[in-house]
Length: 111
Image (cartoon, rainbow, N blue to C red; front, side, top):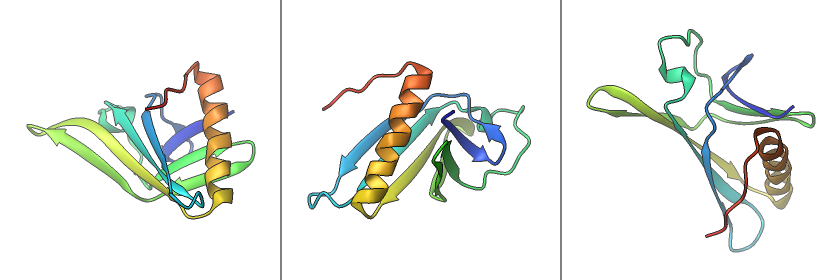
């Protein structure tokens, strides 16, 4: 079970576009998640956004860097940035993403 939550206990249904970059040193990297029209921007969501939480059987990875994007006053998307400082954090993130991709039928494309 790999899921993404913005409010504890409420899995996000929207599948994000994820862009990952690795530090030149190989020690860490950055992952940028873009959710197009996620449920947290709909009127049906009633919780508080407290961050982005990546949850699987190994535990939890979290970030507080979450921003909403609005166009003409209408909610459009949510962007979350996860910064990984070490190779261990980067490898842990990759394991989460492999589980998440497998459960949601996603693929990997390299640029």
